[in-house]
Length: 180
Image 1 (cartoon, rainbow, N blue to C red):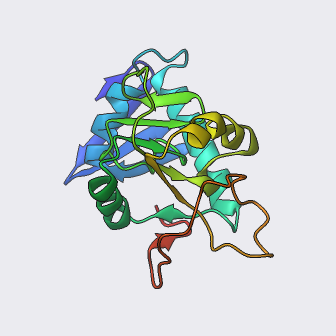
Image 2 (cartoon, one colour; image 1 turned 90 degrees about the vertical axis):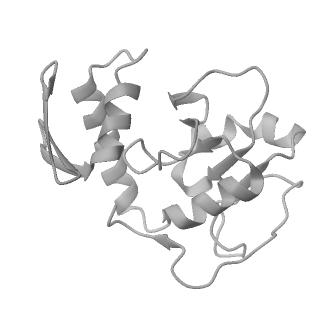
Image 3 (cartoon, rainbow, N blue to C red; image 1 turned 135 degrees about the vertical axis):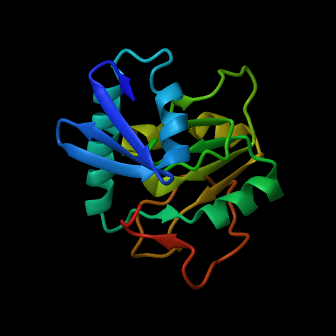
């Protein structure tokens, strides 16, 4: 399939997209979502949009504090909290379980809504600017869950929200570094 200057081939559920930096292999379902969402209302063509997301993902992969949470954990959180929105990460790693996805005020996919949606937030998946943008909404609503590293003196990048409280602590492999 060719969309503009971007070529992709899907074989046995794996899509290989040819980008200027080289081939990118992702799940075929994720590619199907991305080819529709990254072409709608975006100023960049699909190829450069994907390249920007890949560059950001590679930068996040080098950050030892960043984690992408497993789809099993995210699917459970979505179900328990009736979340319709996901904040953080890149379009390459965000699971297509959510109706809306974004980073801060940037919309990656989904509809613009007037009211705050129940959401799952991957705090390490946001940059410093993106972390400040949702704070007014988070301070006035309670329909969100924030995923972050364990609280403690070593972790100085916790959200400045007095309203937050720890409801669970996971042991084992609930997140992964790289390997997306």
